[in-house]
Image (cartoon, rainbow over the protein chains, first blue to last red):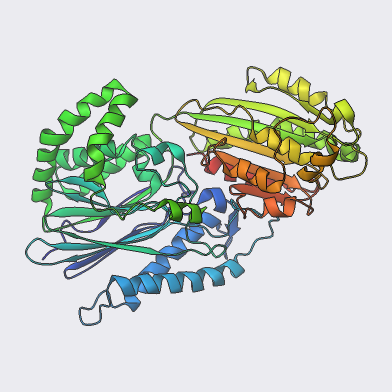
Length: 330
Length: 227
């Protein structure tokens, strides 16, 4: 019943010192792990705030950092570090919603701006949030709970079955993971004191060794498709000599292609580095290398590959919203 | 996103009635710099535009300006057709319109119905409105439409809202930037509610008094939302 490899982060600022993703949240307790990413929304929160001491920070980054602080506090309040006090993912979701709303309402007043701008693209302190809670059980079981608001995502990569997304983006358009890469659909739900938002909870049970991680859009949008995002991860795991070198390599692959800041918080269950490394090499040779060889043939090949890959990729995702839900979201 | 191209179209709706005379030069200046500033902001964020086009719809009042009620251009591809774009904008003069309201909603409807680019993997469709006045209700055309009133206009604000929310525009690509006073219908559109998503509203007369910080905030909001 182990969390291994240990929690670690990939964190990339597209422009040094001006990133809008918070540092990843990484927390572990015996048989339990919490990972989180927080992506301040530059489109809505691009305005600069001057903090005490004269330091300038974008409202987006300020919001992302605040959400991270709130998430850490919510985990502590729910007894994350203590077996006898651990209240579980449902309690974390309730605590997150309550404490995010309290803290963001309070901070909105502190950082209230003099801008006269209004409209749906000018929300105060906007940020996404995605936290993954992992609880291991015997013999190879792991319960993963994704808690999120916005388009930051939770993923699981199992040694035998590959990458799967645990979340659905909160966007005005319900698109699959390939289509959403080119759509830039505006978000329908994210953390901000100016809108009525929610934290969604989705829990799945995994019965094989796995990696699990949370990622901001700058990370997964650095690849032209979900298959290629998995390829970047697996190539790094297969080629590197150790866990941290693999994450450095994965980060370099993202940084080379990313057009945005990127944050990933990642850990594993029921498998140390040698197991992960071996599984990645096997997945690369047996599955990814032959399938992705066809990608050189262009978008048609990518769409055909996605058609074969999608069901496996979405095997743990929440149900797609109904047409009625989509209309209500509008 | 790796390997993706951004195709950006921009439609500039300019109130060219007589009351705009004091600010017309500033609006024209802003119209000419807007695309350059957005392109620069995108370059700063390491984002590349494969193609940018801009067109202009200058409007007055269909109910008192006759054939001068509307002047519109086709899309100019920038920077290649920059001189032609500048000549068109330079030729606009603030005149006519009588008292407010003006025919801004007709201009907005024509802007929404533009022949938007579908090229490339990612598009951004921007409409920018500069006006210092309220707008005629679209219902007025039922009883008083002049001969040159454009065909296919929405019948009322609900129809126009459907047009904005509907399929002619790519939902993810569209953005509406309003420099308009606190008057009908801008208070509704600018709030970004009731179907008017993806909006930024600077409540003033045609952007008069727009401080540099707010201007940069608008440009950044657009630049950050590409990619």
